[in-house]
Amino acid sequence: MIHKTDFLVIGSGIAGLNFALIAAQKGKVTIITKKKVNKTNTALAQGGVAAVMSKDDSFDLHVQDTLAAGAGLCNREVVEMVIKNAPDMIKSLVDKGARFNKEEGSKTEFAMGQEGGHSRKRIVHAHDLTGKEIEDVLVEHSYANKNIEILENHIAVNLITHSKSIRSSTLVTDYEKQCCGAYVLNNDTGEIETFHAGIVLIAAGGAGKVYLYTSNPDIAAGDGVAMAYRAGASVANLEFVQFHPTCLFHPEAKNFLISEAVRGEGGILKDIRGNEFMEKYSSDKELACRDVVARAIDNEMKVNGDQFVCLDISHKNADYIKKRFPNIYGNCLRLGIDITKEPIPVVPAAHYMCGGVATGMSGQTDIKRLYVAGEAACTGLHGANRLASNSLLEALVYSKNAAFASILEIESIDLKSEAEPLSWDEMGTDDSDEAIVVAQNWDEIRRLMWNYVGIVRTDKRLSRALRRIENIQQEIAEYYWNFKITSDLVELRNLATVAQLIIKSALIRKESRGLHYNLEYPERDDVNWLKNTIFKKKSL
Image (spheres, helix red, strand yellow):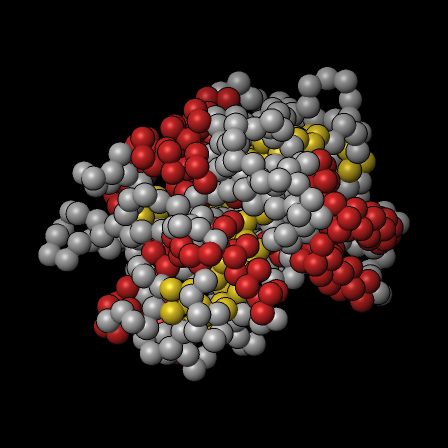
């Protein structure tokens, strides 16, 4: 079965939905999403959207904070463009119905939050559920739009390019490659469906599940980056994996984040004996950038032999804590932790990919008709380390830019007369009878990435990880070609691809910079001597 659509959007977070609502003004938009439409990283984002909205702030200050966090690898032109668009992005969300916190007694002035790395209070937020507020509003508008179709429980398997299709891969020809759709697994039927599209947007999010411990939901398997790379798009800076310093440490708490805003509002980090320690690592203490705080916590745990550290905000007024952090307070209380009276046990966990599919200013990849926005993209905004709450902002700006560029590009595409892609061919494959192979490889990848390619690295560990991941990939390839596609197999294949790219990127960078901290090399934050780490698959 072949589905035709003007715009195919892979992913239903803030980037995918914002793009869809703009592109729907021009044609039919089909959104495919792995689970339910609102089960995304966006919906879990607690902090907010960084934006210059107050008189004591300025674009220049926000730019400088972003550049400082990025440790010499940010693209200044991109940084300035994104930051100057921020107020308009906030207005567009408010116009759609998003309700952000206001100053007490004011109907117009936002209550701005403070987060690490920011020199001013500039975080627009909705309590500690900002992402959910934005996601809910965009989902509501998307369902109400007659030009948007949302297909849940659909997972993209491979992109389709204008070259000869053979089963689940492609042969690269001499002429310029164009993306014309995707093969998609319908999890409700188990069938692979073919989508023929004028424009494809990858907005599939990050790859936190490549690590054993992560703040991300199970869907974050690096699908967008892996698919784009296999199709021949360039990917960049994948060595820069941001570990959030403070995820809740509790056996019943899966992936629950303790927002950076808790430190922004006065939360203090202590070891389990009650000793404060951040002053040893940075003059900014708890408000240092995430890479510094994560390494500090990691070091304290290793030196003291502790499983966690504590984040204490109990010295603040109890009513204020409940009002400012209702989600965190409620979730912790259900687990027996009253954050108004006791510290919160926390550990670092994989949180955000600063690298991704390389893009231009409008989200274009180096494959025609293929765009990318959100965490799957490497735009040049984050450099070697993302400044807190710049991610939702980036997703909004780049999805808007990509939508307007796509609307212009689709004018020259005649989808009706274009040759339809070949349907998926399952000839020679059987139903899997060894699911344990998938589970074993999944677990091994995540453990080796955590142990060898984590917060602190060495070339020896990275080389060991590369040898292991290459062996795992051989097993996955054999399994992939012999058995029918399942969602678990799709995600495992993508995780292995992204893991290998992270390791190779980390081995190339012979320095410590931002989120890439290698014990064998000095730390640098000057203007880069080694610019972006870029990979492009030449053939498949």
